[in-house]
Image 1 (cartoon, rainbow, N blue to C red):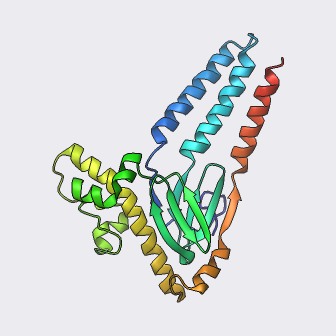
Image 2: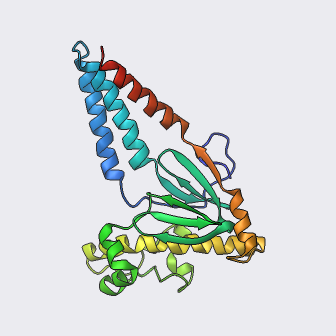
Image 3: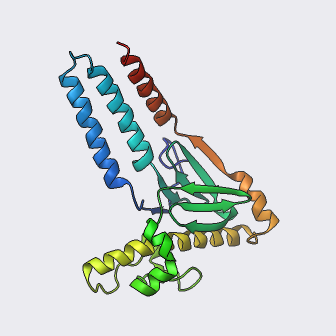
Length: 240
């Protein structure tokens, strides 16, 4: 259950789920932070320069941690949620329910784990997946949880099948956007079901609940240290 981004890891992701929001704003935020640092360096002789540099650096770390760091992927044994300041490894065999609303929510045992990396917009959440499907049309590669075949969902490519007919670029894009969170729900459940079969564990049993003790958490110490250091430096610079 090692973090695939850590040095010396041996366990590889078998499927990655792309983040549904935050990347554009995150990139723009980093560009803004970098620009503020450059301005501070160019005006280093002015009294406000150090405060600007440290404040911009703290803002950049915060943008990275909040908007760009969160990701979700699956390894052979775990669902990995990399959030703002920590990463959680949840054994696939211990996963009981999966729901994507404004955030991805997974329960294992009596514990609930969330990730902001995958989510529906507020409009999609209010309408609900069934309304979206009947009102917009289901993406060719998707079906409601528990229906359709694995091959129909395009699981080999880590996402919905894009090979279906494309009737109107904008309409197809809206449908794919609305359907992807549903695909994530289905796919994680599929991986959990396969893990239960592999380990001979019955879903929603006491044995499955007990396996939730295998959940691991690791703190994002580089981000925590960087954010703390830059915030402290910014506060100190205000008095000099």
